[in-house]
Every structure is written in structure tokens, then in C-alpha cells.
Image 1 (tube, helix red, strand yellow):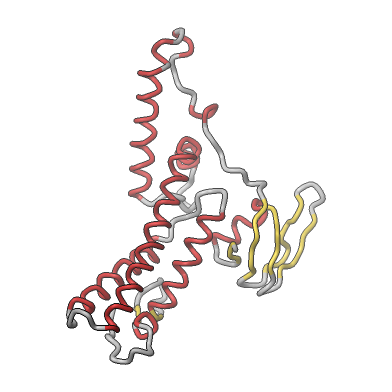
Image 2 (tube, rainbow, N blue to C red):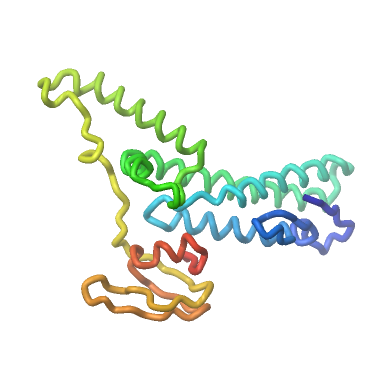
Length: 227
């Protein structure tokens, strides 16, 4: 990752900074483009009813960029106006990162049983919804919930009711809820209604109000964004 400290007050630090190796193709993009991707990742996670696959590369890239920006800020004289502007940018990025991670953590705790159930059934070819750190946290959280329930309630129940059935107590996201979306790439044959098997083509740039379930995979592959 390379960085450029702009001497021009009219330029945005993120626009002046290139980030290499952001994806598997080693495409060189600006930090501002990564930031916009982080914004959309954050928005998708907040608006989607389910836990989305993690965008670890976006988070890690932006965290590294914050580190570079802070090093540049610390290298200039205190009170410098440009440095103050860049500090505001750092705080804005930190807020998005923290909010994104908090949103995911809240969903993990809410859907912990169903997520771990899904993880147990997942094949090697299927992507995981949890990062390795999130999976560790989910397992520990689940064990703590079960221990708490056992000591507080289950041990006082009849013997045949002293075990916690994860499948029965699991909270699952409402996949039939409706969401607003914007099409980033043209999508053909999107199934709108399961019963009628009605399919529609979604044109790039168009906006829709649709049921979440039919378009869930289109969010995962970045064909659409939630708004």
C-alpha cells in the first residue's frame, strides 16, 4: 500500500492514495474507492435481514489505510488545517468500521444457533458467513448462553426437559421481508414470486422494492445494493 500526503487543501487524501492488491487481480484502486465499497458494505449489512458473508478484505484494507493516514497526520505540525481535515476523514472511517462490525456482532448474537447450524451443514464449496474470529466468538457465545440457561432454568426442569434443543430455540432471519435495492449490474431472470414463478430482468441503475429472499444471492455477488 502506498500513500501520498497532499499539499493542496483542495484535494481529498483518500482520492490521492492508491491501494494495490485489494482483490485477487491485484487491481490498483484509490482509497476513496475502497471507502465507497466500505460504505456500501456497511449499508447492505444494516439493511439485510440476514448476516451477509464477511467483507474482510475491505475492512482490513481500510484499517491499514487509517494507520497510514494517522502516521501522516502525526508527521505534520499541530494545528495544520489540512491535517485537521484528514483527521475528520479518519474519524469518519473509524465510525463506519465500528458500526459495520457492531452490526455483524448483533446479528451473530441474535441468530447464533441458526448460524452454527448452517455452519455444520455447510460444504467446503459453500462460502462461510462468518470469519474465523466471528466463528470462534459465535461458538463461545453459544456455549455461554447454554450454560446460563442450564444453571438458571433447565436444571430445575424435569429430567426429560433439561437439554436445550438448538433447532427449536433458534431465531432465524425473516427472508420474506421487503427491501429497497439499486441494481449495480443487469440481472436477468430474477424470480419475483415463488408461487407464480414470475421472473423479471432488472436493469442496471434501476431501483426496486422487492422481497429479500429472491435477491439474496445478488447482494452476495455485488450485482445489487440495498438502499
